[in-house]
Length: 267
Image 1 (tube, rainbow, N blue to C red):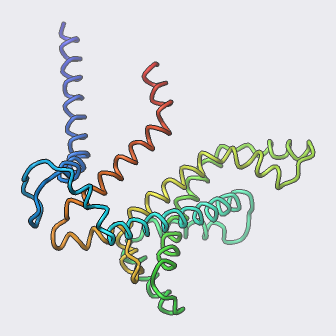
Image 2 (tube, rainbow, N blue to C red; image 1 turned 90 degrees about the vertical axis):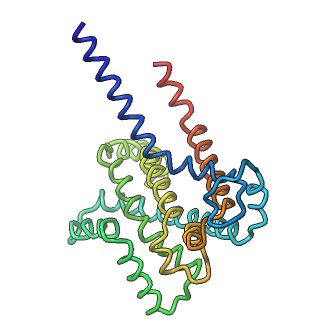
Image 3 (cartoon, helix red, strand yellow; image 1 turned 90 degrees about the horizontal axis):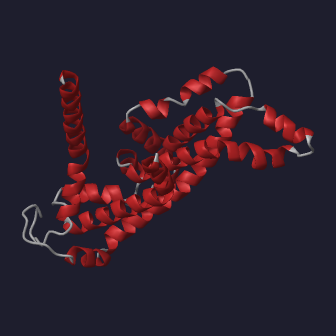
C-alpha cells in the first residue's frame, strides 16, 4: 500500500511539474493567439474588447508587414540553401581529408556560435562598409549564411561520426564513379543530418533580429518589423500573422511527423 501511495505521489508530482513546464513554454504563445482575436482598436492593444476576426482581414491590407514577411521567407530560403550546400561540403571535406591547421579551422567553427550576436553583427557591418557593399537583401543573405553554416556542419558531422566509408569503396569496386557514388550512396546516408542542419538554419534565419538589425539597410524582415512596432504597441494584425505562422508550423510538423506519432501511440 505504501509503495502504491508513493508511486501515485510521484506520478502526481511529475504531472504537476510537466504542467508547469508546458504552461511556462506555451502561455506566451497562447496570449498572442488570443490577442489576435481581440476587438480592441486603441493602443497599446492590451485591453480585451471582445472577439473578432477583423484583424485577420485587415492583415492583408498591411502591405509593409506582408512585405517584411516575404523578405524574411526569401532570405531564409536562399540562405538555407547556400548554408546547407557549403556546410555539407565543408563537413565532408573536414571528415575525409587531413591537412595542416585542420584542428585550428575546426575550432574556428565554434566562434560564430558562441560569440554574442551583437559582436558578429558589428563585425559584418564593418566588413560590408569596408568593401562598399550596400546594405540590403544581399548583406542580409550573406550575414545569415555566415552564422548558419556552422550549425549545418555540426549536424552533418554528427551523422558522419557513424558513417562506414567501406560502402563507398564497394560502390566504386562495382563500377560506379565518385560522382555517382556520392549521389547514390553518400548523400542518402547523410540526408537526415543534412535535413536537420537545413531546418535548423531555416529556423535561425527566420528568427534572427540582432545581426539583421546591423545589416538590413532598407530591406526589413518580419522580426525587425515586429521589434519596430513594439515601441507603439504590437497591433493585433501582427498577432494574427504570428498565429498563422504558428498554425502553418503545426501543420508542417503534423504532416512530416504524423506517421511517427501514430507509431508511438500504437506502441
